[in-house]
Image (cartoon, rainbow over all chains, first blue to last red; front, side):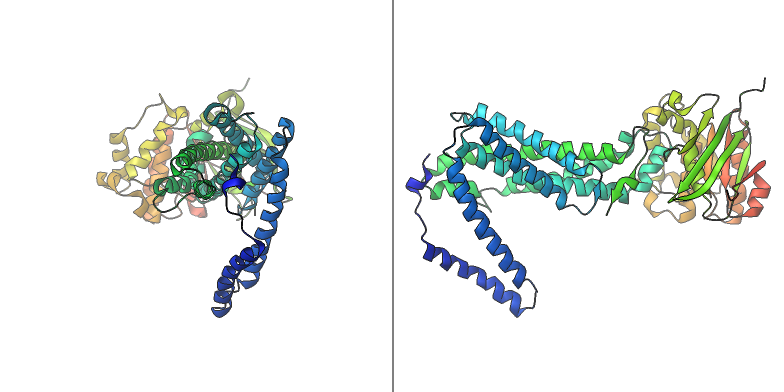
Length: 266
Length: 217
């Protein structure tokens, strides 16, 4: 794949024209006094700067042929995702960052690794123009699932605390007492991924597929890539959510089958 | 040599947010005993009952049931025998019967008798409730009915030691007396005892066979 050959470049002037579109939002915010104007401008500027920098970084990265370096970049991306997932939750407990990092790293490494070596079979297996975008998409989705799952686990244990403790008080193990909360947390965390799979291609034309088509790929080829990536995203999210919810549950209960909500902060 | 008591706690200490609630606390239960915990609010009666069921980590002290410590029973099995009934009764969705049956599904309760509707219906009758009570949706119960459900849910499991936290707080006077009679009969079977807290000094005087005051340390 040589995307830049087929893709139509966009000049600086036309990029500035696109920036005008965001002014619609700013005007709307000012008119309705939404108080979003400042945040919108900051967010838009951040997006532009981040993407331009990433463009340069990727151009450099894609000519590298060092597996260790590529994996290091992947590790950094996973770390950012793991930390961001926790930063979106309302509450915390000791070890929550570690749990999130472990879950996001092991699930995304497993899924991306299998896809690269078994399904896409890129050559070499660590080819950065394949590995980095795929990993990025898996991470972006796992991140959402993990923060939802963590939030729901903490929320569920807190709101159902009396039910959980009543079960414990009558001889339930911590698994028996928390099973419902765990199940609900995993279910809720998976809903966005499953919903988007339902309407994919009907309501939303997925970004990656659109990108490949704009870059000149045949739609039938792009669709196949999209199918692979959606399965990767779904299984990566499921594994990550499963991992983080179980690890969080272990932290918020004790070996002595006690509910330890005193470990919850915020 | 003295016979092994049914239940004993020795040297219990508990502090909460840097404040010492009780220290060097000992208590012993013989079969049939009904121990009343007496203390002003905020002196840790609930925390003591929770500590005996090991629902919170034990800060210091040793617990024994029939001479064996909790670790040797295993924690879920310990709580199947030393059961705490909270002063904030709750029920999951479903009927009263669903709530009474679901606790029999815990691994620690298997092989200990199982769901016995006839027995529960006899108890319900004594408490002035029809057998149809079993079919009521648990989430619509009144505070008092929820308290009865919570009590029967624990009672049917036949624990050795029943820890009752304000068991009659939402009940009217006649139901309270009926609960006391029922508990006395249940406790008459061999190898059972209970610890109870109550805001009502008359109930403590009427129902308990021994009292423990939680004094200032």
